[in-house]
Image (tube, rainbow, N blue to C red):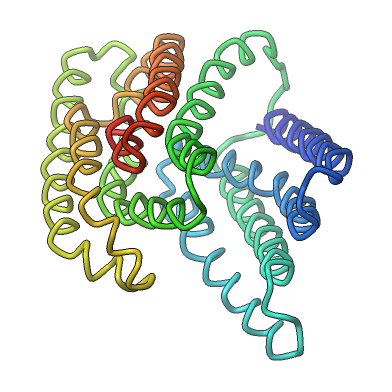
Length: 315
C-alpha cells in the first residue's frame, strides 16, 4: 500500500512537471489565455492521481463512502464554496480563479481522504514485513493503465475531432449534447463502482457464482440505462435549452448517440469483469482497436456529415 502511494505520487508529479515544461516550451504556439490555466491545472494532477488510488483502495475494502464521497460530493461542493468566497473577497470571475479554487479543493479533499483511509487500513491490517513484487505488479497494472487511458481518449475523441474540423459554435453544441447523456452513463458508472471487488472475489474458485453474478450485473446496467435513455430523449430539448437557444440544434443527435450508450450497457461492466479475472490484456487490446476504429470513422464521417458524422462514429 505504501509503495503504491509513493509510486503514484512520484510518477504523477513527474508527468505533471513534464507537462508544465511542454506547455512552457510550446507557449509561443498556444494562446496566452490558455498557458497559465494549463500550468495551474497540472498542479492538481498529483492529488487527482492519489485520490484515484485511494478510491481503489476504499472500493476493494467495500468502504463506499470513503471511495466516492470525496471525489463526487465533497470536492465539487468545496470548489463551489471556495469559488464563491474568492469572488466575495475580490478575485476576478475567470478561469484562473476557478483553477485556484480547484487546486485548493483537490488538495484538501485528497489529504482528508488519505487520513481517513489510512486510519481504517491501520486498524484492519496488522504491520508486517514489507516485500514489493514490483515487476509482477507493473506487468498487471500497465494494461489496466492502458485500458483507462484508451477509455478516456475514446470518450473524448469525438469532441476533439469535431474541434479540429468544425467551428467553435458547432463544438459547443456537440459537447453539450454529449454531456447531456451523463444521466445515462451514471447508471453504468454506479454498477461498475460496486461490482469490481465482487468479480475479484468470485474469480478465485467460484466460476458458477461469477457467471451468475455477471449476468445479474448486465440486467442491473441495461434496464436502468434504457429507462434513463428514454427519459433523456423526452427531456433532452429543454435540458439543452438551458445552455442557450442555439444548443437545441443538438437535440436530434441524442437519438443516435443514445443507441451507443444503451448498446454499451447491454454487456454490463465487462471491462471490470475482464480486469478482475486476469484478462486485462484482452481488455486493453479491445479498447485500443475500438479507439483506432472510432478515430478512423471520425476522420471519414465528420468532413462528410458534420456533427451527424461524429455522432455516427461515436454510436
